[in-house]
Structure formats: structure tokens, C-alpha cells
Length: 231
Image 1 (cartoon, helix red, strand yellow):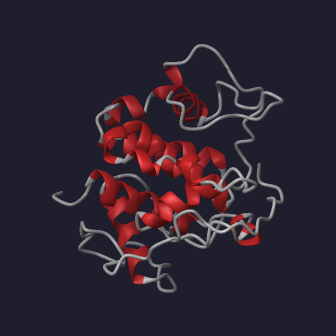
Image 2 (cartoon, rainbow, N blue to C red; image 1 turned 90 degrees about the vertical axis):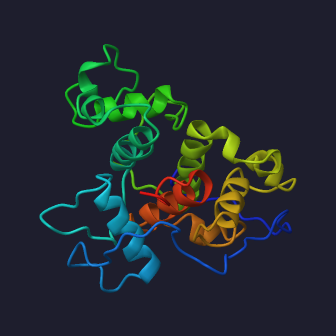
């Protein structure tokens, strides 16, 4: 959930590694695709523009608003129109017409009339995200960094399982007594991700920004799946 996360003082199993060549292997060939990216690090601007180039994001009113938080409905759409289309799980046309594909409403707060209905149902069916014990999905809830790490890693591991070694199983990277998210954060950071240390509970409980989510998603797609290296 997006509430306070339990603190931990355990020593990490695998300390996060910052690659010498931080950033994407693929090139966006543009880092000014939106007019509001000036305060973003270069590698964030590159990732955002590469995502825009491949139709994963489109912004709103000509802006991307990289410092705004991102909610669970928005994330569901990005994960479908991005990784699932890139890996040919769905065609672009199918991704644009998902609301017609599902007849059953599985979450109490995701009606079939909602624009995000098909996206949420798709990521649920693909075992990428879960709902809450009360049967809700809470589509308007802001995603925190710990939740974001899990969603991003689950997505790429589901679509490209052979790209990860057995040692990169998140469950193997949690020390006894640590919080559930520490393994996800460590594996993501070790693959070029840019999140706080896995035991920094206070920072990982903070909302993930739109720029942060796109950078961490794109870096894992690029470093693990080579999704943009030759495109």
C-alpha cells in the first residue's frame, strides 16, 4: 500500500550498483521533446523522450509534468502501451481497444466504463499488479517508490523471464526481517535503476514522480531486454 513502510536496519544482500555508463544504451536522439524537462537530469530527459518516441507516453496539453506523482491507473496504461506492445504481446490496435475485451469487472472501483478499465484488467491478468484485500484497485492512488519498483520489475520479469539470473529473484535479495519491497528495489537498482537505497524506508514511501517512473521502466527495458538498443 502507499502508507508508511516498515523501517529496517538490516545489511543489504546486494548493495545497489550505479553503472559507470548510467543511462540508456539506446538513444532518444532528442532530450527536449517536452518543454518542461529542463530541471530533469540528462538521463531522465533521454528516457522520457525515448518513451515518447515509441508511443509509450504522450504527455498532456504538450507537457509531461515529470515532477508530478503518477497514479495506479496511469501506470497500468503505460505498462500495457509500453512493454506489452514492444514485446508483441498486444498490437497497438489491441492495446487501444482493451475495454471491449473484458466482460467481468474484477475490482469494485474499476467500472467497465472507466478509460483505464482494460489496462487495469490486462496488467492484473498478466500477474503484473494486484489489487487490495478489500477487492479494490484504488486507481487514483499515487504510486510510491517501493510499489513502483515492484511493478516495473514484475513487468519485465514476466515478459522477459530469461533475461534475469536466478540470483536476481527479488525474494532472494531480502534479509530476514526486512520489508517486502527491499528485494525489488535492490534488483532494479543493480540493473541501472535510480531509487533510494533499499533500506531507506522513508524515501521509498514517498510518491514516485512521473519522470522517475519512466526512467526506471525504460532503463530496465533497455538494460535487461535490449528493447531500444537497435531501434
